[in-house]
Image (cartoon, rainbow, N blue to C red):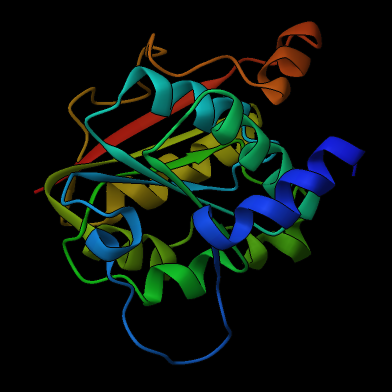
Length: 209
């Protein structure tokens, strides 16, 4: 971490951060966490936080809960929260699925999964985030009409995601295929790398019935 990031982590995590413990525990009170009642967007794998910060700044009427395991990324997002005075962002440190298990059913307005690890080797596919049991858990936490938005630059993973999401009976794809790239999703570092390498980026946007 840079000195600035380390300082932000030390000063701001208590106010804007959340440790995700392993195993069963009490449900997370989202209204208490944010200090208000508003629609909540879950950002899984927020990386260095630039995308989360940009989307939260442009969308002040919703709250953004980012979850990440990479400490420098958490620290960088906290620094962005302070610099841009983002009152609608909280940062969780730990396993995303453990966090989701602690959220009440129907409590999320949207879930974003942007450029998750594709685990390209076949023997590692079981580690992928977008698989049937995980999708069922994420969908359960969405409010009716809530959005599950995924993006990837790995063509094989994009097809696997689409097959998995199409198979969930409670999810609807309004685009009947891959979605046009939405203007509200900022271009990420991974997306820039993909474009430089001529890898197409696929967006998949589904709604809970």
